[in-house]
Amino acid sequence: MIMRSIWPISATRVSGELQIGGCQATSIAARYGTPIFVLDENDLKSRIEKWSGSFKTIFGENAGDVFYAAKAFISVEVAKMINQGGISLDVCTGGELAVARAAKFPGERIEMHGNNKSEAEIAAAIDYRVGTIVVDSLQEIDRVARIAHEKNRIQSVTLRLNPGVEAHTHEYIATAHEDVKFGFSIATGAAWDALLAATKHESLKVTGVHCHIGSQIFSSEAFSASAIRLLNFMARYKNEFGSELENLNIGGGVGIAYTKKDNPMSADDFLKTVKEVISSESAKLGLKVPRVSIEPGRALIGPSMVTLYRVGTTKEVQLEDGGKRLYVSVDGGMSDNIRTALYGAEYSAEIANRESSANLRDCRLVGKHCETGDIVINSIDLPSDIAPGDLIAVPATGAYGRSMASNYNHVPRPGVISVLDGTARTIVRSETESDLLALDVVESAVRLDDKSSGK
Ligand code: LLP
Image 1 (tube, rainbow, N blue to C red):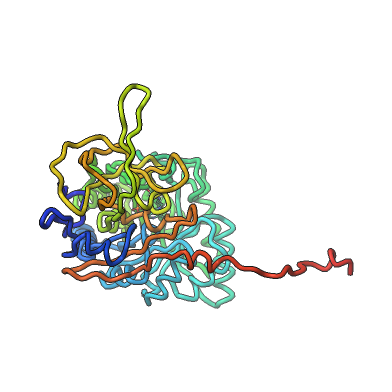
Image 2 (cartoon, rainbow, N blue to C red):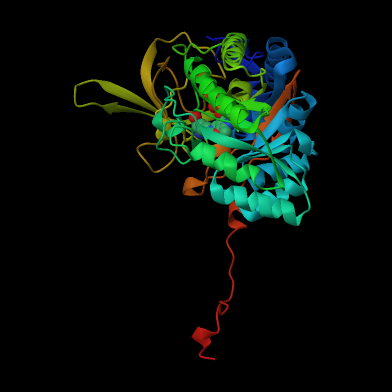
């Protein structure tokens, strides 16, 4: 059954077969092969519209930017869709910035993140006139200041603060308790020291503060708590400097539904709650309501993509407790979706090429990699007549699927096609074995230093 909260808006069944963007699953597989990521273009566009519209309505004159977090998934075509949707872009490496440049994404609507940006990345960001660089260490403050000075520029920067808030999510994707690599802790005074350090540089303009408390979060409480801590920091700034910091960025992290058990917040509920907290806390502290920005990645693109796999083998395994488990192996796995192995993430799946009235049975959906942990879905009810050749669709793979893909076992990474009104087009080409082999070179050895040559 196509559950609306998990599947992209256009997903439906026609003559029993899954259709996305007006394209039949079997036609997609026949033309593009499997595995393949299928992007429902209308779904992404409507989510951009929803978030940006609600944000403007709810925050009104205090609405800053909705930055799409490129790490969730980025390609030149998707960067263009983000630009056309009128929202901004968060990049955190030179690579993500290069995609933005290739898409001619306006520099002033780009924000550059990263806890260890290289000098080349900082220089590239300044050259591209990015709107703001979010600084994350004392060394980086000096680095950005020096490079901006050398380029005769005044660079706007935002301080990445750690509000010390525990977000309820997997520990690897929670980012704002004290023992993490990100940000300057407010509680220990590191944040204030960073502010003093940054304001000393004439080539930097400190325009505000930022935090990101984690990812796949289902309640607005931790967002509100961290906004309050950042506002208190802004109030201290006002007391000591006599002026106010303009920007408050509360980061990304809003969760989405992967299975029917998940019950995420709606954009409206989330934004309204946070807006109320920010307004009342600002009034309490005698601050103007700041210009507020957010950085959703997963909430924008996660539900817009579906991964299409083909079943290669099925195997019934006898368990020690007398039970039996059906292993269903598909032609991808941890190389296109590492989230199950890494975070114990849960997904849903359906047979895509046909509907079946066979009884459901508990299956484990696994990949083709040489590793027991190569699991797409640990336990899922699928029709018991599932067989080699069937297509399997896994929804909600738009965020941190293709973007975290690897070539483990020398498996080429799947491409991404965009589907819309019965048409399909490649936006990221599937890799081939030749692409992988092209990186292997035969080179004669070169001497690297004079000492070893005895000179
Ligand atoms: N802003 C910053 C500074 C971030 O570090 C992140 C995500 C976001 C925004 C966007 O978060 P989102 O709205 O997409 O949750 N690979 C993990 C998620 C890691 C997220 C890292 N930072 C996963 O697959 O769940």
